[in-house]
Length: 278
Image (tube, rainbow, N blue to C red; front, side):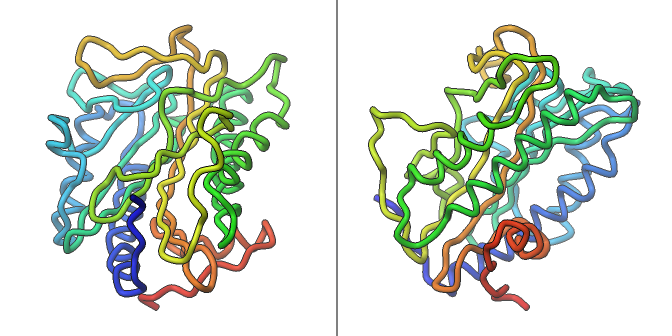
């Protein structure tokens, strides 16, 4: 069953989303050559504490850290530690969440560490982020879940990969419902599957975490011995972007974006819903 939220509940989720945005800003600034992924985790902990919010990753299924730090070929669920030292030219996806009064926010972004990144890496992150926004723009009342999946996949498939070949849309992981729990129904594929059908109809109060994961090669992954860290099977680097979104009577509200998604959605011809906390 999909959990449909009231406007008051969406306002609480917006509070959690803004905390996540603050975590993103602080960790992006801290993701510099010489920093460890454990350093980034400590930064996130301090931001959450300063806002009186709880981490939703710490302890989730036994996960031992506050955020996920996924470097280069790591797709998702990288565990912060003192051994992983960021180097010039690395890319890192930082996935963070927060709980405020029992309501969850969840979002991820890909950061460039230092300088000198290959054009194909810059394009990889751009394509992944833009596909996420294409999915967000498809969150319209009357559409179905598959319309969001189709928008994400269509955008990625239409982008030429520098050097030839195709981008790998990671198959085993995707977006999800969010609200009183971090991961809820429905599961959102980042591609269209005939086996899954059209999925539920999108109505006001429907909340999703939309999170495409894209690699420079294979769509296939494997989990390392720590039972968390997910890598591409061919070692190609990957990007991960995510926002939590609420569909309201006035349109989509990007809960984890500082401006509610207003500027970016306007570029796509979509009017974002008013911010309930403004």
